Amino acid sequence: MPEKVCRKCMRLIVNSDVCEICESKDLAEEWFGLVVVVDPRKSEIAKRMNIELADKYALKVR
Image 1 (tube, rainbow, N blue to C red):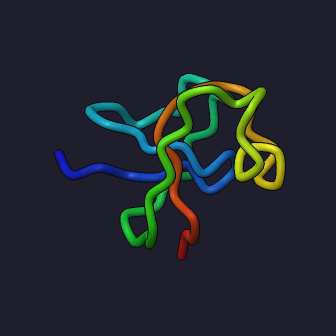
Image 2: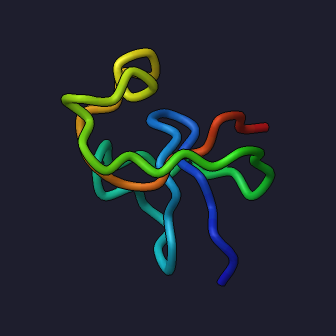
């Protein structure tokens, strides 16, 4: 199963049809850019994207 992205929180989803963070089933297969957040408290990008958990996120979702 290819990686999908949750349209609500932009998190990459692998081997699932539901986002574990926000429990959304609205997933997209077309997405662009990848951000890996290691420490969201210290990351300026995480703050701008409103990310609170360390994980992989897409920059743009279609």
